[in-house]
Length: 231
Length: 81
Image 1 (cartoon, rainbow over the protein chains, first blue to last red):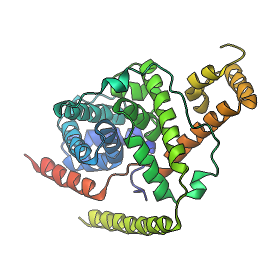
Image 2 (cartoon, rainbow over the protein chains, first blue to last red; image 1 turned 180 degrees about the vertical axis):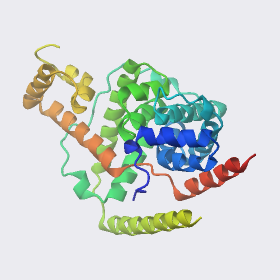
Image 3 (tube, chains in turn purple, orange; image 1 turned 90 degrees about the vertical axis):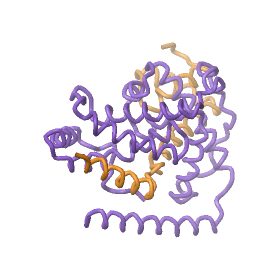
Image 4 (tube, each protein chain N blue to C red; image 1 turned 120 degrees about the vertical axis):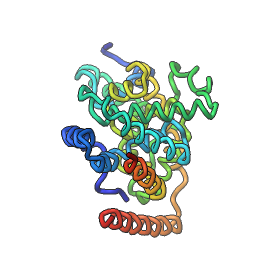
């Protein structure tokens, strides 16, 4: 279930620029649509850096507030989305450092070694036919969450947010070469994780449960949107 | 790019291939390798499939409670003089 008002990848930059101008001209309410348009990306990158929802929630709030207070510094040389993503990543990295969790050496020492795939049997059936979307999403989210931080960042920016490799490297503040090498490893680990999860066939009861959950979430999202519109 | 690729070359250049990048010559060389190497073919195919699934399931939507708290906090900030 997705909010149809938040198509992250298809946000026209011109509309962002207009909204930024309105905020700078004193129309503070124009900041809200900017938040709505980029909420999911900011959440995803915060989560990619920090690895858990609680910390990502706080980092996301701080990133938007920082963007609002420093909006005057935004230059049209880059997309608003790229500028905002950079703020969000910095905010999340600062939080990670504050909780004294450093990127483990285990994560980076093997960066340049080739990851050797272990599961090399072809998949029995198309996972998208075997599982419901919600169930498959949970599997995918679990595999991505378990990636070491430096690979998770690269993967989320490039393959979840579908940024270009150049944009992703710029947002994280690493070279294109480093991004590509982390991304390859991340992709191979995610493939491996997915292959492992797919070895266990989905049960019928799980399928029914997930369909029910999907409907409940969908209803809740509609209610929230309706309430927001009224407010 | 070499005319023939070995299994390591395929692995190292996997991203370019699944992203649809690289010269026609490179893509052809890779395809020639996977036509007779089952292991590499599985890795290339399932990596492509993995990325398609990741896009299709749209992971990590903002939880309702997280979104609500964000708007509540912004409301306060936007109301500041």
